[in-house]
Image (tube, rainbow, N blue to C red):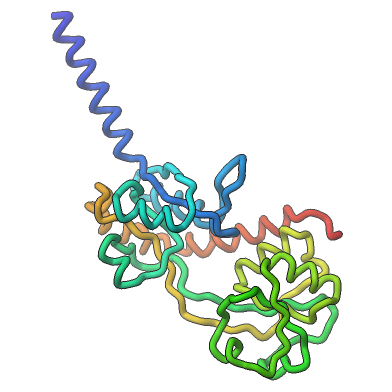
Length: 255
């Protein structure tokens, strides 16, 4: 009788453990601030909060695995990772991944930043005669990229561009808006740098995706329905907006 009870206890423990393990999702995370931030102490960022919200909606929790982007894609191909975020849909990727619809982000806005109190940029034509900070080899939008009349000052790091802007060494900086907002706040420059009126919007759907070799692939329909609910209710947009609001609140003093 004792042996039988012991056997039942062990089986129950295994079933409970297996159920708990089934709820844990391995998420490959690359460093791409402010969406995904990997430092020595923790992994954070907008995408991490979005992933947590999505998985919580279906009763799961993420197990974050930090790695370079190339490793993350490889893990998705082999099934070592169950999920990835911040990924664009491509035909070759659809062979190894299932994309969760709808996308949680649909636009990529290229913003121009200027020193507070200087003349605003309200149209593309206002860029003429300005020195524009750009990142070396970066692609922004066709008209800007091919315009040889503009005076562009390339550097290898976007953070340096904002330091140069604050110092008056360039007149404006172009960058993806979310990254620009993050860097301005991180450098404590919100009082000295602002966004110009003119910007360039481009439709760029960004998705969560599940490895086709993951057990999670069987729950893509459930995940897509959850993503739809969170999108329609404004949860995803609120997480993104709240992140930047908090970032500005927590910014260090201006130098």
